[in-house]
Length: 146
Image (cartoon, rainbow, N blue to C red; front, side):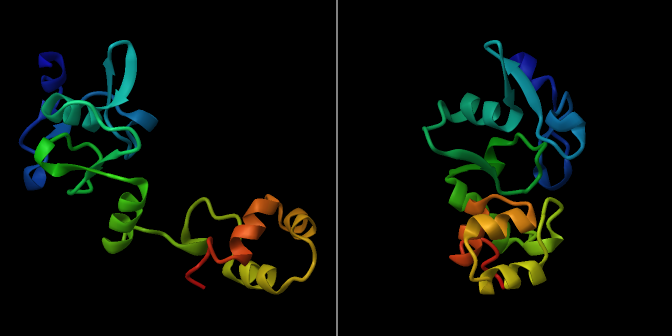
């Protein structure tokens, strides 16, 4: 535990305890990384385990402060993936549609896909996506905001 806490700056903004050692994704906005029991783990998850014990299956350790480097146990809470997505949307951090950096489609393409009567396989081939993506769009489980 001492090795872990030696890598934490407890003087961060807004009461955050910031991870000062290595980060996943090369430190470019990534989560802190810590080697525990021979396995790389996200530092905020390790902090939670030190403070509260094992993380129940199916749950994530989420940040109240939205600071990925924060490991302050008071800033962390357990929730599902759905809780995390809801929190993200409520705080205005979601990037819906073609503003998302990984979007392959535009809003105009999505509208065209929804009105296209061909098979999902044929539509998918034209847009360079999987047929399951077409199904999700047509059933409004993806791109539901338009």
